[in-house]
Amino acid sequence: MTSDDISKLHADKLARWTFFLVVLLVGLVVTIIVSLCIGSVGISPGTVFNILIGRTTALDDKTSYEIIMNVRLPRVLLAGVVGAGLAIAGTSMQGIFRNPMASPSILGISSGAAFGAALAIVLGLSFVQGEFAVPAMAFVFCIATMFLVYGVSRTGGYVPVETLLLAGVALGALFSALVSFLTYLSAEQIGSIVFWLMGGFWTASWSKFWLAFILCGAGAFFTLWFARDLNAMTIGEDHATALGIDTQRVMLIIIVLTSVIVAAAVAFAGVIGFVGLIVPHMMRILVGPDHRILMPVSILTGASFLIITDAFARTIMSPAELPVGIITAVLGAPFFLYLLRRRKHMMGW
Image 1 (cartoon, rainbow, N blue to C red):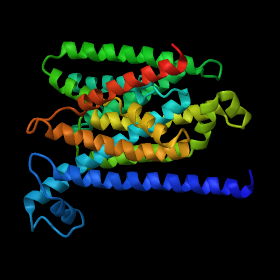
Image 2 (image 1 turned 60 degrees about the horizontal axis):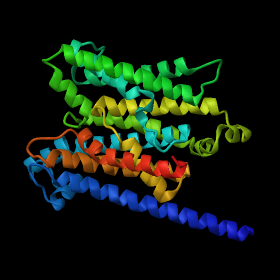
Image 3 (image 1 turned 45 degrees about the horizontal axis):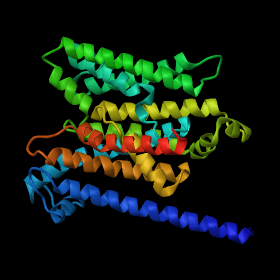
Image 4 (image 1 turned 180 degrees about the horizontal axis):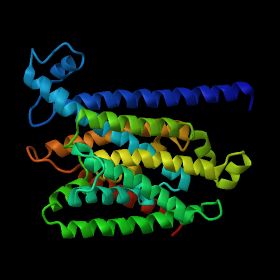
């Protein structure tokens, strides 16, 4: 193969990647606008567009302006940030563990966050007051669980992947049991706990969006720097080490970044499952396993996916509202079974 052939292959790949990114970006913008239009009060796309670009103000149409700018827009944007964060977290976890069935909650960090939130809801324990009392406890316990899992798994400066997984499963089960215990003790707060565990965006606000955007955005930005390292680690740790990659250091950094992303997502939206499992695998089928393109397209698709599911959650039983986690589970569980069946045929079980 000549250098011209190689250059043509690179140019074709770059063109294909650019096409996917542009299509998904346009799709995300359309998804946001459509989601802003629908709800218990329907608003035309033209009105939404004029409000977003500042052509229509509160003086022109106070009701529509308040609904869009102070109710729907922060909720839609928060859903997009959480979806994007969970998607890149799932992509990173699947790359580290070299398993397409891995998800952001595989290390038990979501269960740790749920326990922190339950402590704030049931016992009122939190170092922050007001609307951030529950998110703050969920965030701190999520990060603490990650360090606990990593510390338990560490043996002589080395962390075996198998031990890390087992420690995550064990601690996740422990925290889930503690959440169930707190739920059992508090009949008065059981509704709040259950709704938080199912996930949703009914408490969305601009302040929560900006905090989630900063944390998830920073985590995703730095995770993208390790796309090449993840490509090498996907083939195997020995191969990555031969290329000069410190696999233990990279794994720790990615786990920390992923935990920050998941902590922010869970803190402001509750426990929403399957997004980090479905989206990366779908995109891997579409664009291939190269993390340099897999991560960006997963971010865009994850944002669109969760915005769409949230739109269903707030309209399918209007004026009542379903937790988003129910819809993602309904969509995700059959897809997970499909992955198991596909893997069964591939492995010859």
